[in-house]
Amino acid sequence: MASILDIRDDPSTPPTALSAPPLHTEFMVGWICVLKEEYRAAVSVLDERYDAAGLIRGQGDRNHYVLGRVGGHHIMINLPPAEMYGQTHASRIAIDMKSTFPRIRCVLLVGIAGGAPSPKHDIRLGDVVLGTRVVPYATGKETDDGFERTGMVRTPPRELLEAITFLEERMWSEDLSLSESIERIRAKTTRGQTAFLRPANDRLYKDGFLHQETVCDCLQPESQQQANLIPRRLREGDLVQLFKGSIGSDNRVMKNAQTRNDIAKREKILCYEMEAAAVMEITPCLPIQGISNYADGHKNDDWCLYAALAAAVCARELLLSISPQIVAQYPLTLSGTLLDRYITDVARNPHAFSSNETEKLRQNRNSLIERHPLIEELLKQQLRKMEDGSDGDIEDVQNEVKRLQDLQATLKRHLDDLGPIMDRHNDLLLSHDAAVRDEYTYLQAQVQMDSKAMEDFAVVAQSSLQTTGKMLKLCSLKMRNKE
Image (cartoon, rainbow, N blue to C red):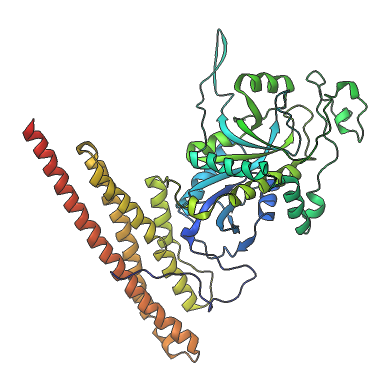
């Protein structure tokens, strides 16, 4: 069978300010942020940033992305629109991201939250909470016995929980200090050296001390209400501490200390935010939250950037604690609708960002071909299911195989359409530039090989489908005869 060749950008690609990206299918880590502070922090922790000009988004994807690398992990970060947040917005980001990057194996929701300190958990501003449980604390009903939560508690996938263990071991062995990592990142940024500075004031007020607009003690450079502050010891060692546990997530802002404490005690909540529950309904994810306030009436924006950076650095260190090879083995969760969006838009939105004709042809060919391995992988999964499956689910699996075959046929049809388009550019063979002539000749050969490879795989898949189907029906018939 002809192989579909590696389609990484080659050295003939015109130089750009950013690095050329790896294959689209090599991006397996999604990084979701909702606020501009979270986005600025996320971009600052990248080891490398890629040129995203050639990215074809899934049908209807309204996100814009920054593509980059952390260690050996290729990640995509969404660019959050101004003044948009909450559950509906967060779930839309997650859905659209998976339509453009269907091979996502893990999603990190990295942002800021309001802490819920307690005698057991000395959570302070700038600390980071890893959400091992996400509790929709306000989703429920009022009964004669009080409020009854009906929202489903969700947990990150086991693979991400294991990644937390790797991160904790690095911190336990003193191989990692979050404070030092934050300072290293801050020092290498330009504007961030000042913007990401750790604020000096960290005041936790008693529950009964309510916020007073314009004249509140929390607005003063130095506190004049020492009696209303909860005394805390000076923290020894790393100033930034890592906590793991339940995160309260619902479509409301928590700004009441008493309510914060009551719910936190009942649900064992460490912090409050608004997006994690909605994102986890779309895709398994790990919330990583920097504490920027105490979820009371005294909350302000002084700690937002530092807390966002603390969360981003923690996310970075988590990724550095696991290998890309391990992430590649995480389960692939992808609905049929998202796969359709991923395949459909590559044909509807051909590349038009290059003025170079050979570059346009190459980019369009690459966009079509890089989608094929995913369909091939999913087809093989479904065929294995047929081999191992029972009589009861044969029809469902066969229908899914047929749908995948139709998508593959769509890709091949559009790839075949490139042939006549290339024929209309035969004048490129007469170019005075030898590089242009060579590139065009190479592309012609590639398109022919790619089409043949798709055709060969389609024949093998169809043959396997028919053979497996016959075997299962024969086994089913024998079982009925025995009965």
